[in-house]
Length: 213
Image 1: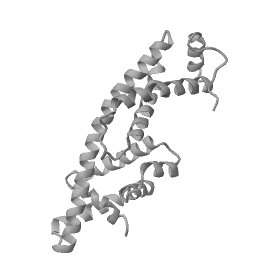
Image 2: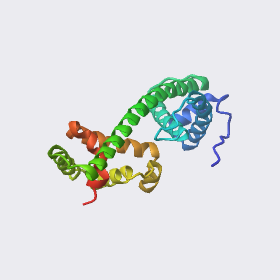
Image 3: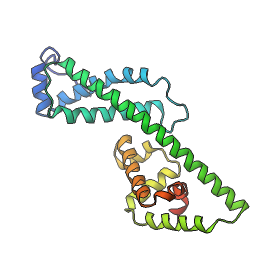
Image 4: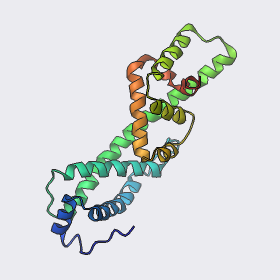
């Protein structure tokens, strides 16, 4: 896609600002492309210690941070005051720094949840082959299965695909949304279940089995 403009947007910042304020698609495409080129090396340098066992790849994580940064910038732009291009770029870099910290915090939380769920599933499989499942576990499965039935069909299908090991990127493509939007949608569904069955949340590792009935 050609994102060039008929004028120098940095030298003619007033023209760029006016076009952005009028939501001119060409101006926004130019700005987003330039921001992405600026943010990629910035984020790459600051994700050097990215965990190898993370659920998302380093590139996927960076892309998610960029998408969240651009969304936040667009919201700030509606009410902000900008006098030159350097302030625009400084603003987006500052936002990216905050989004990066939030992303790492979320990543650590999800890794803990992921391993907790994996451990729970491992224990369950062992119980199925060596011992009898307890009454409490049966009740937990029944409760979560009941709550799953309260979800909308699209929500239930998304969870089934995710907990069966499908990549969020693949699910997102089928839903015609971005990977970041798909991930947030999945998080909202899980949080909805967490709120309903907080003490039984660990049993969400059973989701692939509970959805097949």
